[in-house]
Image (cartoon, rainbow, N blue to C red; front, side):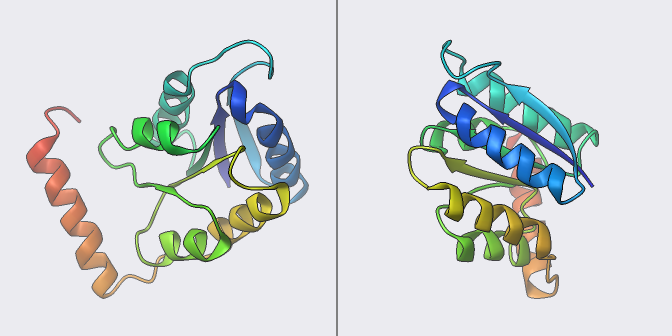
Length: 152
């Protein structure tokens, strides 16, 4: 599976560790965002990178990291077809896949530690969308997008 991952400067260190973890598990990683952890890099630009990779099909799923995960998840969710879930624990990461068919996982380096982050990443990639009544709800999300997003 191809995964896009991007972060601002505040998520740089955790992004490097998540990339290593994903590559050790055999994922192909498209790395984007802050080139280092010292120079300021906007979560807006990082969110655009991961959202566009997933929306275009260059990546099947994405991971978005900033200081809290809030800003970058807001950016990602401005894209039609993107369901970016801001998570702070493994249960949330599991449920966002099972119930919401989330295609981007977001979290904050200043909010979660490495163990929690890697647990969320593993849950996000191990879980499948359950469909059924949850598919009806995801279709409802798509209908809201169709009514409110002016462009594709």
